[in-house]
Length: 617
Image 1 (spheres, rainbow, N blue to C red):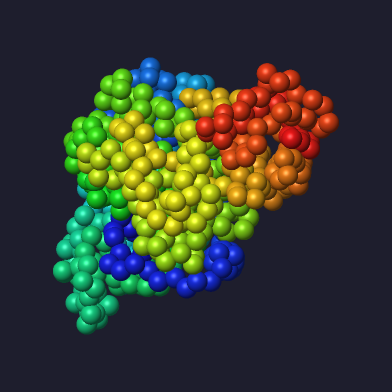
Image 2: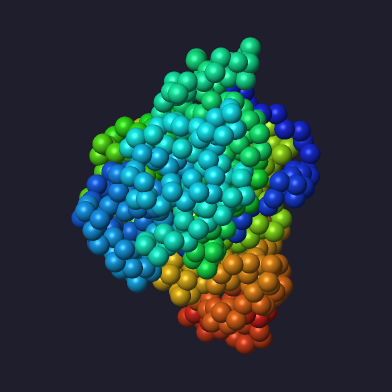
């Protein structure tokens, strides 16, 4: 009934042949070519995001935002769940409890932040005629899913008061209707993106009213074990009619069919790269939107399952993926939420969100120490956003995964195939979170490669390769490792990406056993439409070998790259102490670089070169 997963554990470990990693990548690239390659997200959408169903009023929202800022926690995006609406009606806002919301959103924008509004796929039909434009216009345009007669709208109940009807997004007229309403609402609330929820579609009446006819479509001989009643449970009758046919055949396409129109409407409304987050997805949904793993629970096992879901959706072609950090249902605990904040800091889509009636769980709520640890971990995320953004570029252009399993990179390694407790950003950055209550260490598997501890730059002992090693993980730390042979671009972090994008860059060069490494940096203005297709971007390739760091400019189509400034280059794994460093033949002052023998780390500071062929030797 559609790809709607919020964290389940597969019963068996998948089997992978010993084909080369390049072959696996080619398969994914061909698959994306058929279903549509993932969209290129806006840079700001890679920042940390905060949400809650249950702010209740604008004062609670403001206090939450203010305490995040008091603790200087990196934070780019504020979401608005259904409590911002007037009586939970789409395309409205509560002018009593959220009085001044339009003006407040403008304040957030001035501070360099962005905001996301939620919209649901059902429209109440019981307002006074002429008082609720979304329904009146929809009636006029004939955009609803109909009953089996193909004429009368199918009716259900959901969040809005009274009965609701359901837009049929497979109908071109519905796309026109939806686009028009999204454009009009932009003039009411100046949103930056749209979160579409409940789009399986959900129906609280579970097919009991007006009742599904007793026929072979509504009651087929075989009913999947997920339902103990009928295929209409919590959704529409299977014999309902859509533009493409019976709901029985189009149910799994509902969220998919809503995502593309929402993407284009948001892009048209904002004039910028679209942000769309959808609960219901299908093959190809990644071309126009991202996904979160649904209504999870504040439980340790759900935190673990989120890694599985994240890896799966990258294979599905939906790399912009994450789970509700700290859990959606139930009250969280201090330790669970802290460990989840550490893990969630490395979800591609990083958002803390929970349900109405539960305790607050934003990272500023728990006090100074919690905020300090969360801030430190998020600052690591923000410092590595240039690397993450480059991975999304490669995903958009080639169809690559952004987050991947160890098996993906080490296909011939039998041990790597069953690991779902750690993951990689691209090929080079390993995240090994704490997933058990009370644990202060993690057993980490290190495939055959050179690895470095992210925090210290120390090389992981060779004896650990191809086996598990117990790594210290005190409450204030999530174990992170860099794979030798790769160069990761970084940037000094800030409290928003609006600010961090103005900061100096750096390179982390992690050498393999041959003393070599390579990597790349993609850079554009971060939110303009089709910068890649229009070649309005900067792309550099970095290679290091024989003591030389070289930069090759592959594309120089973004003038904003002229101001790129590198002030730190860190080299991990040097075997000999460097006695001199030159930049394009010019000697660098001795006090401008340092070398740590115990950490085999070398750092070159104040490297203020925007582009060109730099050499260190």
